[in-house]
Length: 468
Ligand code: B12
Ligand code: SF4
Image (cartoon, rainbow, N blue to C red):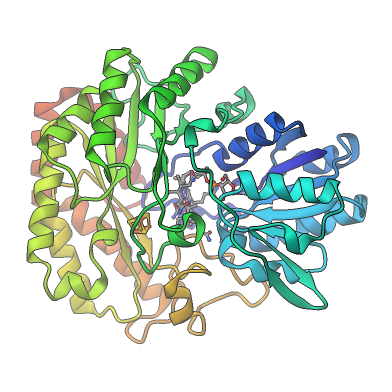
């Protein structure tokens, strides 16, 4: 079959407000590129395109199926695209996948959408295409949602790919890699980095079930690992084919299994891959030895899910053990020269002024080099959505547009949305201008002089935005 896969990316709805805390890395649409490789290997003709050219391909590539990957903020854009596809080629099936439809399969009730694929796409989408080709009734395909007589039908879950090593490498292209861009603090760390970056996975899934996160819906709390040999084979092939030297691991909790991380790092060191990379970690896991090994293998920055370790109430009730553990972990990675970025969320409806002050104090005590401040966002499919879906601040005509984590979304009895934005800016300002932070930064540059560029770039950006 001919399958056109569309990455909505960041082309539409660019909102300057979204970038004010830090400049986000731009990445290739790795989910679609992984699907594309799998479908090609299964004999389909596949093309992955950006939204600028998709309509050209609807005419000239003439696909049987148009697949669109959707995040919540892209809800209306996906509906518009589906409508346009149907206007120009009514026989093409429109299939949505990715985080938003996985948590909000109701989107399939829109008359221009034929099917939603829920969660991991390789097996479910490929089997759906086979069912289409063979005229098998949709209800027999697993892991999908469709509309029948005005009602939503969700079929039984699709099996997950058991052996991740059996998947082909994602279909990288120069076109998508050339559009990628580093975030600020990890840009040009030692004057040799290319601003481009590639995403890579060493695992899928996360065993935890944080109330704001979609991971359990998408990957069903089941963690699967790739062998270190395969991961490094893929890194080596991307580096030699495209000259990429910076890699972003998209594992949900990279440091979940210390043995796996040690093996992977040993393999990178043994094969002298000579790259830089970053990953997302849980600050209550891992020890000095692990972070030492990661630094030796080229890790330059870790994004720490502070929220993933502490719920709002935990932050204020029994935090001491957890917070000391987090500080010890952050110190271990700080000591080997890794940049520590903390992810923190404000805007929980229970949060009071006093709570924000306490959170600030907690963050201030941690050896963090930069902060990514977000607002609590109840994505459909999460426990938080069920709790707060009736207390949202939304634009009527564009219901999910502000689901980017950069705007307050839940009505708060304590703050107006404007006040929350002010509090967030103030939070960042207090963090970056505090004596503790300035001392830490100076000490880090003294210990690791190659990081000076990164800190300078960050300070310039923060002062441009009026934060520093
Ligand atoms: C790495 C990552 C990023 C990276 C790279 C994103 C990218 N372009 O790949 C960066 C830092 C750039 C990023 C940015 C953002 N992210 Co992000 N990100 C992730 C993370 C941690 C991993 C994603 C990943 O690489 N997965 C591995 C690949 C293989 O999986 P996948 O992309 O989901 O694709 C599979 C399936 O979804 C499915 N599939 C996907 N598309 C399609 C399409 C079709 C037709 C079909 C059939 C199937 C299908 O098949 C694929 C293969 O199995 C997830 C966490 C999570 N739980 O998934 C959040 C996550 C995707 N991000 C999220 C958000 C909100 C954002 C931001 C809006 C803001 C933010 N908070 O960072 C921006 C938006 C950027 C944009 N393009 O608009 C949310 C999305 C929730 C939602 N409902 O919208 C998630 C789920 C985290 C969460 N809060 O739970 N992100
Ligand atoms: S927030 Fe992080 S730790 Fe929590 S469920 Fe999601 S991926 Fe796992």
